[in-house]
Picture (spheres, rainbow over the protein chains, first blue to last red):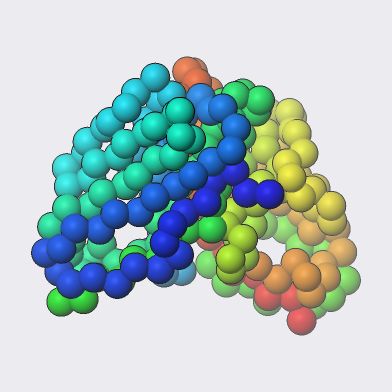
Length: 113
Length: 114
């Protein structure tokens, strides 16, 4: 079974709006990571948040982590058409050391001009 | 910038062929990974390598093998290709130095087995 599960599976918004994607996981983790994938391309790393961190920012991105609820959220503020992509959360479970990442099925974000 | 290069973006092979997918990284990263990506399933780990000549099975190693003779190169081998191996294959590299490091991905190889 998948460790990380994103919600929603698909999200459609207008440019300038905020986009929020959620991720839930099942076991204790070392860190949680968010990646973006443009259509037909590889994954690009966005943010890594460690298990002892609660919030992290990078430009228009804000990631939160609640280890008590085993959940994370990715907020993209003031979205742009170029943000259209699939977004994946990936967890590094403690049982797997730091080498293993378990990916969810992703959220497909469409930002309309 | 980090760079992970996969030798082919698209590849078409026939059932029963032996298929080689090549991945090269220029980051001097110790760890390298092969995933396959299928719709609705996310990425699934096939094999990974801690270092040269070191390898470990991931979640779905059946039907695959790997080779890492040099630090910068990690090859995925489909011993006898089957149609259920049609998929997007992604290679990644990661620095071993400290635990909390991201993975850096290539652009993927879309493999079709006919």
